[in-house]
Amino acid sequence: MPLGLAFQSLLCRLRVLVAGIACLAVGLPVIAQAAEQPWFVLDVSTGKVLGEGNANTPHGPASLAKMMTLYLTFEAIKKGRLHWDDRIAVSANAARKVPAKLWMRAGDTLSVREAVNGMIILSANDAASAMGEHLGGTEARFAQQMTMRGRQLGLRNTVFRNASGLTEKGQSTTARDMATLGVAVMRDFPKEYGLFSQRSFVFRGKQINGHNNLMYRYAGVDGIKTGYTDAAGFNLVSSFTDNNRHIVGVVLGGKTGRSRDDRMAQLLDQYMPMASDGSKRSRDLVASNAVAGTNQVGASAIPVPRTADRSVVQHKPGIAELIDESKIEQGDGGLEPLKSSAQWNIQIGAVDTRADANRLLGRADKLVQAILPGAKGYIEPASKRGAQLYRVRFGGFSDAQAASAACSELKRRSFACIASRN
Image (cartoon, rainbow, N blue to C red):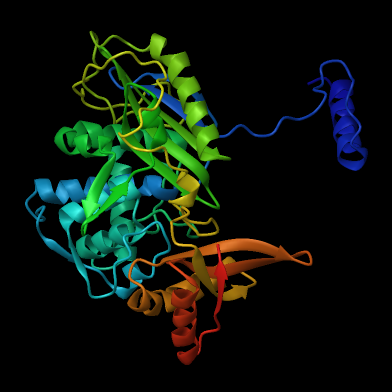
């Protein structure tokens, strides 16, 4: 940049920072644009990158991390170290995980199949932690295995710290890496990949619906994983097929589940016509070329299923109701669960930090579950006289008497408690 123009640029930046005055110098932007949320679109048949934006920018994976937990689970089954009907123990660590979860208690067990369905459909954090501890001994060791196996698959900029994707210092990924991982799951476990298209499953006699809403309303999308935490925002990896064309898209950091889904639909519309028809398939599609800045990601060929019209279709009632993902997959907490028919909840505290709220929720969960199995714990952000608070609550009580009885028992155990109508 010429010296005069560089000086104008510096002066302009100072004016924007100090006074908010727009820059009008020739060749200079009027105002800086906000950073674009990371996204990435890959042609699965050829490994060609069709489009990307901030695809190598570090970002929290949220529940997209469960794709790696599932990959290692499928790999253990394939190698005979794990079987679908094996029982997985639920530790206190797993039971303490914040929602979304299966609400297992410490000492309970669940089958490998239940854990897998829980991770895929509900994005259950307790199931992910239990599986990680079963395979790795501890969740921390399993996270190291996740990171190491990810490197072998081409995830060059991803570090896992836990099996679920809940926010933890040092855990991050990129849009490019999540596309690489999604393709690896499809490539290496095509049969198991079919589980990602499930819309619900039955757990202990209760039907649990999924919340991959784009899959329900956009023909041709057959998975694969949603993710949400307060810190990471709304993340999504989607697989989309149209006749012999097959692409995988990634969107990270959406403000809402719907806006993220709409962004993905826009990318699918835009890039599907550019995808190969499958006649020229790469034999080297995920491991060797996943290098930042390249325009191709490497992987062995994946059979591409045929599908019907790929246009956005109206949701058909009776198949699966569209679900507000933020009210199901709470990740770090802070969002209310789905409203239930029960009209009363209880509040056991209002604390200054989310970490304290998570600890309080974990301490009270087992006791509340003993009083009312299935009670849903959650953390609700609030402000009082300008100060941020985090309310720790449990919902699911049918009437004032049930809520008051629960509060009486909690108070007897040294918990503060108040009952209120939803």
